[in-house]
Length: 93
Image 1 (tube, one colour):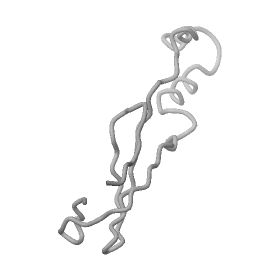
Image 2 (cartoon, rainbow, N blue to C red):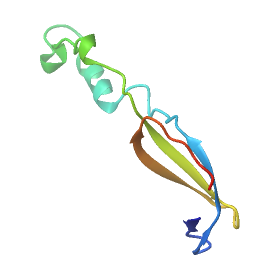
Image 3 (cartoon, one colour):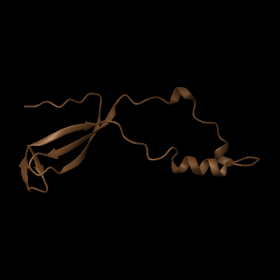
Image 4 (tube, rainbow, N blue to C red):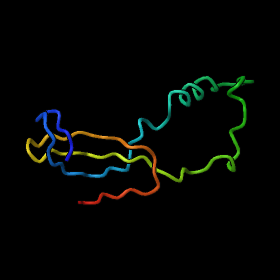
């Protein structure tokens, strides 16, 4: 049972798990700015620095969970995002 804002009541909901999040762009705004400013010859100031070595970069061990809750009465759906967690399972009671 979950609250549906359209029905304004607690109703049964279907739960669908979405774990993959889409990237906003290929590069972030800062990376695009750095590439633009570091074109040409000579010293590029802070954009001349070497990148962080590979041993400092690591993959995250957890992932963010998105739930899509669909009301069984009116059929409207909404997204709910949860915190980072290693394991997530939906249990029907």
